[in-house]
Length: 114
Image (cartoon, rainbow, N blue to C red; front, top):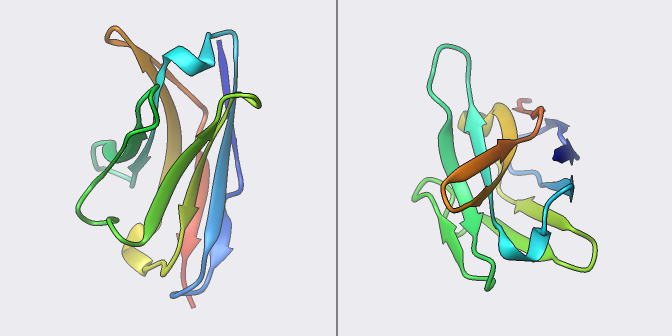
């Protein structure tokens, strides 16, 4: 199983980024996909998930600013991040989960700073 994130980088406050996660080795359409983030010394926390049926869920801190989506034909999940804030700075990890078995990507750094 491989989950490969891309799209991170440095952006100014108020800016936008789109993260992508390409999956291989799993029946992608059957998995709940998610994005988590982690800052140094802190636990990894949920950002957003999208079910196999396409239902999204968002942490309250990103609701209204971030949008998760999936393209089952491309085995890819996306995270559109708008109105970014300095507190969104973190390493963002892609997650695939089915029946409680999680897989993780290697992470991509997002830095929001002027």
